[in-house]
Length: 464
Figure (cartoon, helix red, strand yellow):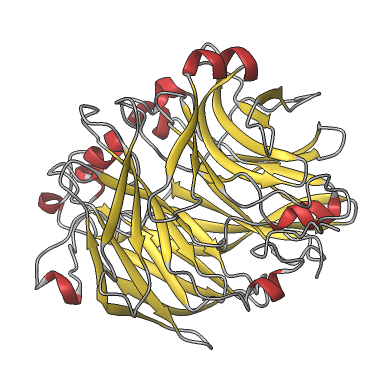
């Protein structure tokens, strides 16, 4: 008698996932900012015992130009083991890779050869708009009942943005997720608390306010996103909105606790209009409602205006620009990528109301241009941006590009792409892996990273 078994990379709990075998490969979304050459999904060797360690070992070119590959995710993950999941025997096999600029969606098979993945299906932009009612797909998360994709705009490129679903196995686009939208118009990230039947979404802006770069008037007018939205995951209805105030612009990356019994999470606000600081907030349950509080503030650093890009000269300071955060699977360490100052910061958030700063490294930065042990003293541009943490929490990877046109606003002389790896100390602290510094071909810049078997931002768990 044949026996179906769940994918061995699925784990009931984050605690068990942390015992998994260390990753040996990463897939990295890479894009051509000039939109002349096809973007690629690049494969990086992460095995310290390999002769190709820290090298790009394969590049899978997309079939078109101008996609701007950005965020991507798996077709299936550990949430398939939830009690209400109808797909317990789906494989973690396919990467769903959207182009944020083109609205094209690529389905990429990592099997049978994970080092040489292949494109098996492409949803063209017209099909995405027609079937989903949305464009500018941004975030991909594997849920217990399908693939959730957040999108920044509707079919016409205007408000509202929202979420659509794809089938786990056929990859068909099923349609718009929301039944009652309430006041939500702007979109960005989306994730959930499966144990509390709650989905959370955050906000950026509409394509007209970012596709040609950040618009100073929109930013200074406090008109980018600054709210969180809470939804009933089962009935797909909007329940509550939390407004951080227009001073806190660009409320971005959602990192809920991995333990499903913990109804809290973290989100970053990229910049404060008051003093150019960045902040990290905790959302949490307060009775039968959700609430939020600022738990970390990272100040801007004074700088000579002559060293600053035109956008910042009048401020005489470098904003940290926390553009990504990551939370280790044990819910202990939170990482904040300060893309402006060139710092990756680590906090112990075991007590989430009272985080403790435990370590940092410096690399790149608008002014500091800090180097890396393998860069032979060269000044580096860009800074810590997309962060990914291994399942056991011992390794932290990040790349240095944010978004093509916005890169140029803060780094006018351009960004040469790179990826680095840090070693995380058990009780706090960070150091560079001096053997690992991956430089990208000049035609492309690297963005999001996915690790073999899953990582700290790929899976959701239903068991503590």
